[in-house]
Image (cartoon, rainbow, N blue to C red; front, side):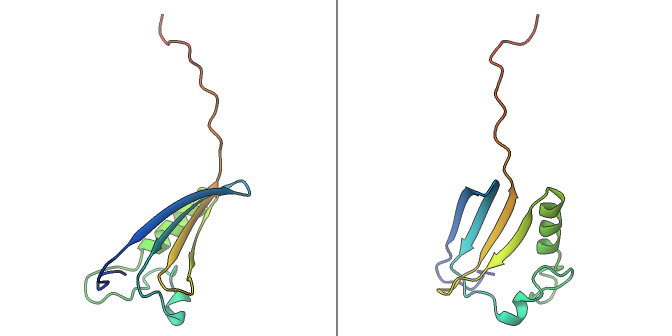
Length: 103
């Protein structure tokens, strides 16, 4: 996606919102055109030529997120680039038992 980007950048941010942990991965690429957006999560859809991809990466990622009770979506900021958002149920850490283990 950022192969021809002269100065590729990637930003990762995480937040907890409404009982969900959201990981956002944003790039500064040229973005995704409207027609391609319609097919992003379809199996075997790819914009790559030749043997560069099977078109399963986003489909599998979205399926794994759903199996964990979450979702994977794409956002398209007006200033370019693309943001993928992985949203999963937030489970707080359980209290730890500080007692030593063993006999």
